[in-house]
Image (cartoon, rainbow, N blue to C red; front, top):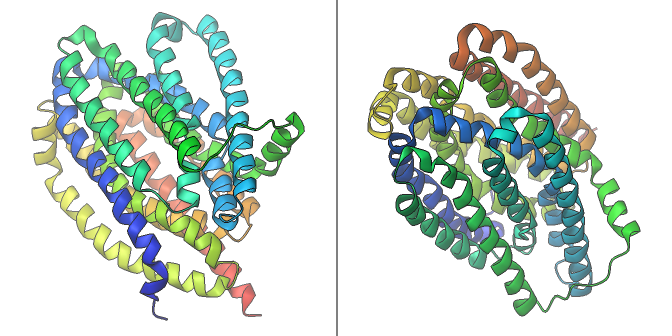
Length: 419
């Protein structure tokens, strides 16, 4: 079955727009990371990385899976402006409520946990950054498949953040700016995007009953739980490494992980642009969508795999250029995790794109729960005995399991359609 390119015209346009932001995600960290590591050191870099992993747990609570559920709702009702206005308000108010809950939890934790208390303002600015990022209505722009404005706004703010990094971080003690700069970025992203929606789409802040907010939260509970697992998995490994080792080792691991995340960001434009398109098309033919996703997986794997092979080969050289210290260990960690971005790409196609858009949130969640349990079982012994190397292998094994389980689930669903 051939893919009809004409049907993907809007997806391609959105991909191009998103690619500009992801190019910035690729290039700008390659500029700032070497400077930051050399200025603040691995230990302080590890401290902020550990704090970020802790605070990211609040992100999944505030976002509550709206990046998927609300995007899908917008894409399927894009011509009903009254519905979209009400949905915008309901989602925004829901996130505000969840933000207040997050702040209360954080204040309690800052009293109970010494490491948070000792670095209170680092954690606080990172939390505020998470809040404003999640209050930004990127889900709306994705749903209507109009990403040009968001693209250039994100790109502009990232460039400003890069400039601020060099301007503000001068000595080792300036590490706390690694938390302040993302806060500044996220605040302006929130403020400008909300203002744009009010002007461009004539949205008003309508009164929404609490019952509507609770209904929205209830309907998205399975997506939320699946996102809990994803965030749990993505940050849990760094948290465990931090508790079992020290900030320097966390800094070394996070340095390698930053490189992997840069290469993971390559896929973001296509999977983000693809989701609302699949949400619309899958209503007509699940079987056709499944085979088209298989084609995308094959073509994408060839292209993406080639890039990641280059990353694997050049890992020592990249480590030397980027960090200048702990080169051998960082290069080894990069090589262990080098194909994880490909695993994430494929499990997104068959998990997020297919299972969620076919309404199989429970199956999607079960796969992630099993993967989380697997991760919990192997992360502690691997990290305890092998430190950062063990943590890297734990992530590799778990992501490979997610890929296999998501593909098998999607394949079984498609097989039942033929019966």
